[in-house]
Image (cartoon, rainbow, N blue to C red; front, side):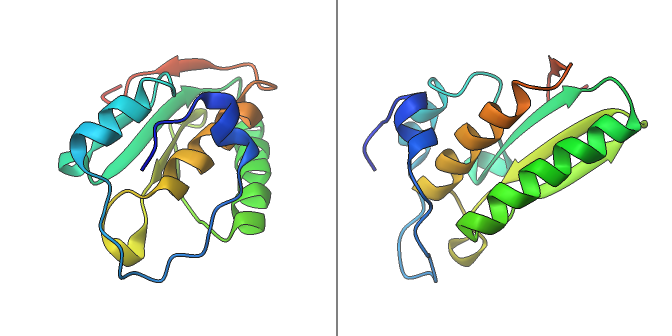
Length: 127
C-alpha cells in the first residue's frame, strides 16, 4: 500500500474487498496514520480508532448519521460507539481480511472531513 496524504485519501472511493488480500503491515499502517491525526491503532495493529466528545447526544447521533451515509456509499462499515451521551468513537477495519486495508484509511479521512462541521474535541482512545 502506498502512503497517501489526507487529501488523497479523502478523494478516493473504497474498493470492494472480499478477502484474499493481505492485511496492511504494521509499519505501513503507522506511517499512513501520520497523515490522519488522532487515529490510533488498536487490537495489535489490526484496527484503527478515533474518539471525539461532541456537544450533546443529538449531535452524536447526527454525526453517526452523516458517517453512515458515507460508509454506505463506499460499502465499508465502521463500528460506531456512543457512550456517556456525547462521547463518540469509531473503529474501522476490513472484516474480510481481519485487519487493515487501504479502504480503512480512506474511510477514516472521509470521517475526519465530516467531523470538521461538528463542535467536538478529540479525545484519546483511552478516555
